[in-house]
Length: 251
Image 1 (cartoon, rainbow, N blue to C red):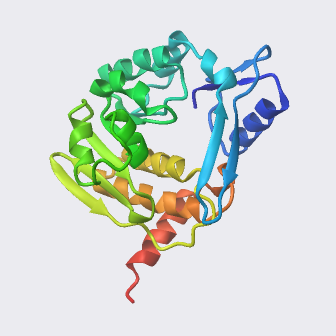
Image 2: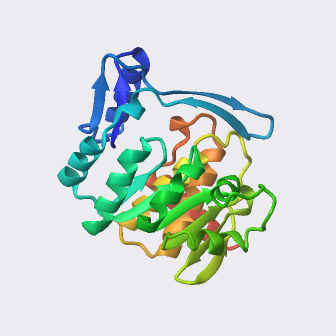
């Protein structure tokens, strides 16, 4: 994981959490003079959320630090959000693509910033609000059948449009596919998009077909939305496997 924390209790706690999960934190900078990024999350009745986000130390990650991490790790898949500085992403994503790394971008939290990055992106993941912002359109201007094609014209090779309880639509190799969501009781949608992206990217690392990766992402997002919290709601690979197996049971 590439990132940064400040010298405060928030940062120390997040590092403990990540290390407890076995995550490589060698490329997470500890910056004593900075504050750690924090988010205030309000969960509404029905599980939808509103998030106020302050990036804090994350905004201090330089292009040089990102490229050093890229060279050290030589990943097969690079998964990014727009939480790093734009100039850092503008160096990191094309460099990853040049070395043969598959690039995946979730265009959040400020989708408009993604436009210049998209020609070097192999897979773009957005929800409908983010898609509309990228296209400079009202949220309800287009339906989910039209959006993937318009987004692909901006440069990414594959477009995935997450649709919450309706699952996802994806434009893969000129074929538009729709995948339904799993049946769950929505408790808290915080982190559902992150769970989707993480499980999808992990499936690509495992060299699973794109459609299977999409299905695993949908299941992961659904499981996360059925549980309270952000990090505590993230499903394991085994839980995703179990949920998929239940879906396939007759009756």
